Amino acid sequence: MTTVNIVKWGNSQGIRLPRYLLESVDMAANEEVEITAKDGRIIIEKSAKGKHRTLKERLASYNGDYAFEEFGTGVPVGMERFWEEESDGI
Image (cartoon, rainbow, N blue to C red; front, side, top):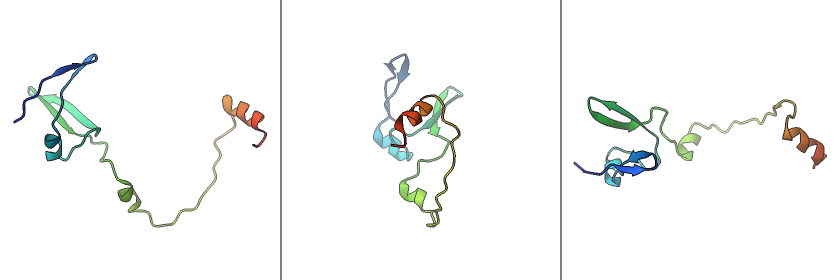
């Protein structure tokens, strides 16, 4: 068991979690988590949105086939119109 203090952090309160504690549950700094309260306990769990994948993990399913396709984004609006008129194809 580890004991820490709840401290004021702006308009909220916060705690610092020791690195060894995060590592023991395979979590790291800046990782998104979900916090719930149940039966007088605060529960911190990894976010259900999905684990961060490394570039190697993302490319693992890449089979080398990629065909570039152009697509339109619509007519220029706002400053896009100004830029197009001023740039004259530069």
